[in-house]
Each structure stands twice: as C-alpha cells, then as structure tokens.
Image 1: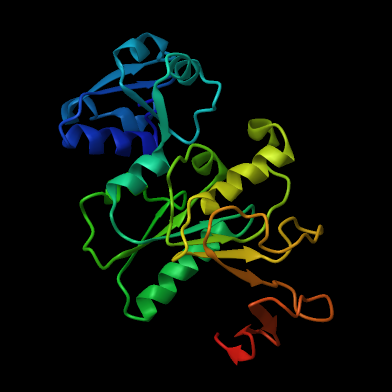
Image 2 (image 1 turned 90 degrees about the vertical axis):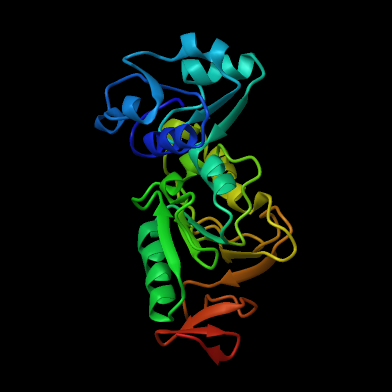
Length: 259
C-alpha cells in the first residue's frame, strides 16, 4: 500500500482484516498511519517504498500518489498489478454504485444525491472523495444500500474494471494539470468513470463536455451504458434534444417535471 493517509490507511486495514499480508509505506508520517501496526500492517514511514516492491504481488496506491512515484514506477517495471484505492474498494463492495465526477460541484451533487435517497426512504451510503473512505464501507453495508461515490480524477485514473451502475459527469474545466500534464489526459481520467459500463448501466453527462466548448453530446464517452444528457443552462442556448433540462427552476425529463 503506497500512501497511508486517509484512503490508504482504510485500504490497508481492509486487506489486513481479510488476512492479507500488507506492507504499507509513506514518504511522510501521516497521522492516519498510527495504529496500523496493531491492525496487522507492516508499516514503513519516511521512505519511497521501492525497497518493498520485491516482496509485493500487487501494489495499491492512494489517490494522492502520482503515477511516477518511485514505488509505483518500480512495480510497473516488474509487471505487477497496480490498483487505485477506488478500484480496490469497488471490487470489495458488492453494492450498486452511483459515481459522481466533474471539475466543480462534485461534493455538493454527491451530498444532494445522498439526501434525495434518504428523503425517499432509500438506503444509501455516501463516500469516496467526499470524506468517508470507500474501503471503510467494505463488509459494513446491507445488500440493498446504494453507494453514492464522489470520484476524483486522481482516483479514476487508476481504475481498471470499475463499472458503476450509474455514472455522472457534471462538467469539465482545466484543473489539476500539474498532475495530469494536459487537458486531454485530465479529460481521459474523468471519462474512465464510463469506460467499463454495460448495457444495463446509465451514463449521465453534461451536454457540453467542456465548459464553453459544445461537443457532440454523449458520443465519445466510452462504455456501453444508456446515455442521458442534461443541459445545465435554460433558454435559447439549451439543446432541445437533451433528455434532462432546466426550465424556470424546474428539472424536466423531456416534458415531464421531475424536481
């Protein structure tokens, strides 16, 4: 486990609790690492972790750990599987997922979706980048609970098979280019949320994938999910073909008022 802050510590505890031998490392001394040793995790702090790679079968990295981190690069050179925290937690949680991503408004939207579930009497757990580490939910949820998950580009870039039943891309604007390098790489990371969805899943996207840069809606998202486009701005500029739209403060699905 490379990175032992909030999400990394949760993954380390999850795997150790399932009987795995877990080697955890961090280049610093995050407070979340305290107590991991008593949970059965072999921890190494103030190190880059390259010395542990030879003992590893799989490497899991925290979202804050960049792709070119020494331990991650060493693992890939050895041909080891490198997973992100989101991917591993999703594999460990059999519940349906609703994943929310975008540049702005992720937390608000995620919390709102959780609120709507609760108000409707539907069991829900809100987690991910919003605060509660996803891995901490593994084994703790009833089967009928829906997981509403805020997913950042840092989390999504490490996904392999992650396939939420519903995925939502709110918007895209230039951000985190110091990490991703280019706008194209940043967008590609965000679109990972749709990449593995199947025919029974739903992909909800902003009709203009890039803010201020209208593009063919839904055509280049990836995956096989049913597309649902929304137009965030009402008025003459709104796309009449959008499945969801806003009129006079009311959200419509076609001509039917929803909210």
